[in-house]
Image (cartoon, rainbow, N blue to C red):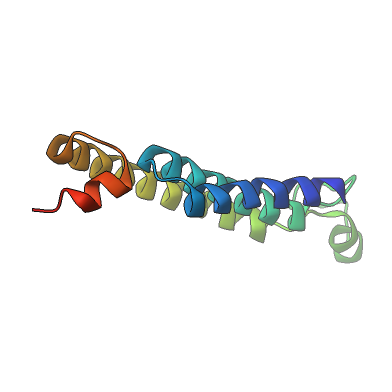
Length: 116
């Protein structure tokens, strides 16, 4: 249960970073924290203490397998989420670099003030 609470704290820190911070890099870090905490939550859902890999062996029947095996679906979802998260992180970093080249600052309020 404490792992779920710690995961929620990581998620809350990411939300706080998105809402309260003005620096673009800090907002990107907040997005990454939200992504990581979501991935951790999905892995925690599929966790089974003392579980085995979801590979059916010949000496096992299906009832034993279903009671002992770890659910592979959250693992597959997290692998997909990691790839998508890497793409969005690269896109956010590219946009941040372009904004810095144009406005010479990472502060959101300063960028809004310098429209033109």
